[in-house]
Image (spheres, protein in one colour):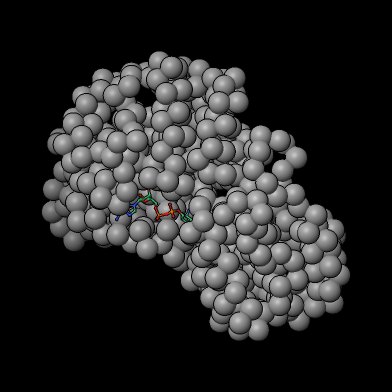
Amino acid sequence: MEVAAPADISNAASRARNAQFRWKDAPFSSRARVLRRFHDLILDRRELILDTIQAETGKARRDALAEIISVAGTARYYLANGAEHLHAKRRQPAVLAVTSAEVTYKPHGVVGLITPWNYPFLLAIADALPALLAGNAVILKPSELTPLSANLARDFLVQSELDPALLIVVHGGAEVGRELIQYVDYVGFTGSVATGRQVAVAASERLIPFSLELGGKNPMVVLEGASLDDAASGLVVGAFSNSGQTCISIERAYVQETIYEDFARRLVEKTSALKLGWSKSWDIDMGSLINADHAKKVLSRIQRAVDEGAHVVAGGRLRTDLGPSFVDPTVLTNVADDMPISTEETFGPVVALYPVRSVEEAVARANNSEFGLNASVWAGDQAQARAVARQLETGSVGVNSTLLIYNSFDVPMGGVKRSGIGRRHGEHGILRYTQAQSIVSSVAMGGGYDATLMRVKNERVVRALSALLKLWRRLA
Ligand code: NAD
């Protein structure tokens, strides 16, 4: 794949800007027509998409299918709700009867998306869909590790009759990402905290808006009364789907001590039964990691934890018998809160279990993190689970679930603390690609509402006005 030179990016930006000039005035229905075709096309052409995602990531076919399902879900959600979200809305005016107020939403122009490798089809294209529907052009820079899925997604949009200049893919690494920020009107970044910080600085230098979807160290809380079998199955999905390379995956589980042993036993049993490999077969549970370097990094994180006293109760090995990038799904116990395995994002198939005496201790330790992306709560009493969820310092919490937030398109998804700034999905996920413009109007008579104060000529009128304002406060 050819790496974009600075001139390529500036050319891409001019082409995108020209195309956006027409696109912004196209009715929503004609933009939606492209997305409708795209939605059906990716389902029809799923074999090619699955093959491409698997070829460049090594992931299991089911994990690749999850990407298609979420892209289709995003398209479906914004097709059904996008027009309403973007519609001009009447708002409370300054003074009833004589003034009015409405807010309208205008596209930024050219949106730059910089995306990671872990879900190369989903993360490249899903955030582009609402940007396009809102009337923007998009320039996408996918991860240099996974260029093919992004190209494919773009091809399908063009086959769905999108003007090719409205979605341009530029390839390369950090240099190209940095250059892209210089030309766009909004940056949507998904990736690591370290890069996110650099993106924020670069966007701030230009005073352009941006959003950051960053990493997590997501906790699960398992309380007495929960079905331990269900919770253990939930954790297997939450920790090991996509080989643990999911921003919202679970890496820490706080389990009440009365149920800890039983829960750990079930988790180990289920983890050890997972089938690893790389093939098109649907019965593979977990594929490889993105590459051998990342696998080594994950293994050295496990090794360090073991050197510091942690116990490996499942997995813990590089699976060179399968290939250089396979790591066994791994469960650790006897892990201290200050070990890197407890504090830093591993981004691999490793989960640590921690016994806790009380709900309060579970909440405090779950919140003891620089990250705040996602969390999961399992309890017998659903009201208690929701009460615990509300105490967790994360952008999302799943009750009886771990990854559900990604497919809950009507609610915002994003992080607090170092996990990011901004949200995708829901109303916010499309309005972030717009600038709100407020249009307020007044009757024209005598210079309109703004001239009201010109009529104040003495203290008596000021007193009457104050009394009126007090009455208004009581009625409001
Ligand atoms: P990364 O930060 O290394 O790279 C992400 C993208 O940024 C790539 O396209 C890369 O080429 C580009 N980039 C690198 N340096 C840049 C710079 N200085 N300026 C502009 N662009 C630059 O992340 P990664 O390793 O590809 O992805 C893994 C990380 O992404 C994990 O931390 C994971 O948690 C996070 N992630 C977050 C979400 C979310 O929604 N919150 C989703 C998926 C992944």
